[in-house]
Structure formats: C-alpha cells, structure tokens
Amino acid sequence: MVKDEETKIVLFCINCNSETEHTVNYIGEYLKSIQCDKCFKKVEIDRRHLRTVFAEDFIDRILSKPHRMSRDLKEAMAYLLPFFPKRLFKEPKKVIKEIIEVLKKKNGE
Image: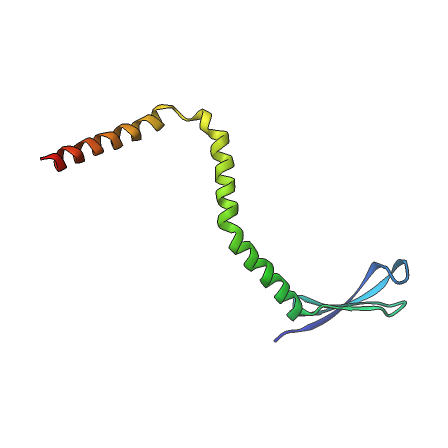
C-alpha cells in the first residue's frame, strides 16, 4: 500500500523572497506538493501532465536516435580514418574486382 508522508524542510520561497520552512508531501516515493508555511503558497505536481511531457520528449529522442547515431559515427570515422591501415581499404577492392572478373568469365562462356 502507498504511504503518504509529510516532511518539513527549509527552502527559498520566491513569494516571500526569503528562506522559509516548507511542508513537502509525498505519495509513496513521489513528490506530490510543496507549500510555504509562511505565505501558504502551494506548488502541486501534476503527474499526468509530467507523464505527457516526458512521453513526448522520449518519443522525440527515439525518433531522432538513428540520425544522431549516424552523425556520431561519421564524426568518429572522420577522426579515426587516418589511423586505419591503407591495406584495410585496398583489400576489399581487390576482392570485389576478382568477383567481377569471375562473373564476367562465367557469363562470357
């Protein structure tokens, strides 16, 4: 069962423009509200709104992930390219040329 908890803490109140004692309410481990004990200004956390905002941000990050990864990969390759042995790039060319020659000979027969 979820247990409600109330705690007192000193925070800066923008309404009072000073540090005052505040009452902080939790529902389980989640913050529910904060209220200034001097001016009684209360800030409540709307979990449904927060879920919506975070869900939208999460979806945007998922959709932009492939673009960000390819950009990062290009940057890493540009940096690392001078350190690769040249043979690494020449060998695949040779293999592809040999495959093309074999295919040409086979089609020519």
